[in-house]
Image (tube, rainbow, N blue to C red; front, side):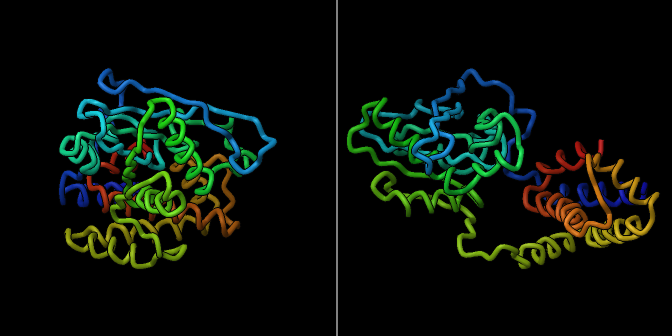
Length: 283
């Protein structure tokens, strides 16, 4: 099992050596006085008229460039807790805000960070974690903000990348009366459920550093070997801190392998940024 940890760390180190990455460091994710967090009442289920439950959705405002009549920018919060380090460290939307005298809003995605619609993540509660509900969240936010700030003939432009790039596009498509334009960076809006080309690209990236691809291959060789013995399974449970893991359950094994693939893939995509996730998991 020590070999496994060494291989996993080796993948992180060799990928991190390729560059610094563009995402902000997690060390910057603390409270910000420049962008104090705010919240508004959001509906739990937008598709059930008799459900009157509400929750607090977090958002931030960037108004230092704004001049009356300027456009309104909406940064779609990703599938992670939202903080100033995230929305000021990714993309060119704030550069555009400065150029066009826009006001900016960054809205946290439901079920991430402090935007928790339900008290827990039970299967029953997670029925409200859908793209459709999240899109309605953003549409509701736009409508409420237009009213509260008395925006006249507002021109909303949405921004997102990857998953939130898709959200940005879908928001414009579904609510053209609310959203004037959408910026979508690396948004795979026509991709199938599983995109094998993604991991082919990750493999190509691994091969750019000596020993990186082999180290990744060794990880899965050792996982497969560990799954064959009770002692090996216990070591995997201890390493990944599984609360419940059944080595004979195909879904459990696939979930574990996907977890490992995602860690390697994210590190390839973001360089040093996601090495923090991997080391934190192993620590």
